[in-house]
Image 1 (cartoon, rainbow, N blue to C red):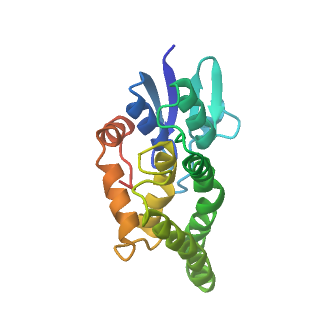
Image 2 (image 1 turned 180 degrees about the horizontal axis):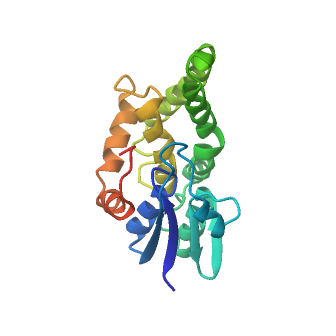
Amino acid sequence: MTIIVHHLNNSRSQRILWLLEELGEAYEVRRYERDRKTMRAPAALRAVHPLGRSPVVEVDGHRLIETGAIMEYLVARAGGRFGAPTEAEGAIRWRQFLHYAEGSMMPPLLALLVVGKLGLLGRPARPTVQGMLDDHLDWLESELASRPYFAGPDFSAADMMMSFPIEASRARGGLDESRPHLIGWLERIQARPAYQAALRTGGHYAYA
């Protein structure tokens, strides 16, 4: 059965295309474009899932949502490739970053986006929100000072999960060369052939 990915441009679903490319899985992409004025997903996605969000993946008779949960399922399905390291600390870090990406790092990024859209009204809140994001970026910089990838010495699904919030931070959250370990990590992952293949499959991606 072909895996179907319901893919929205400039969204979290880019990571699922990337994982499938890394795994060498055959898949079909059904593309959806954001409304250019509101940047929201089209109503057609609600026919796929009531929340009208992406990614949605159809695999093995299941319809899965939530990027982290989809990643865990696909990694397990592939026999653990790009999964948790065997040593205990690495396994803990793998699971931690798989959930941290959306649970902890994305909220201040989304808040920063909303504040930016408020114009002058949002300006007083921007330093506070930026400070929250900077705390995350400083911690992540210190984490990568001691190892090349988030879970340990080897690239894994944890890095794929972390890609979206860090790419968004690079584009609009103040991440720059003052945090060289994060920038170096970003350059390494974006140079991977499977990452580049996923970009060709998924179409324009503003954060690459």
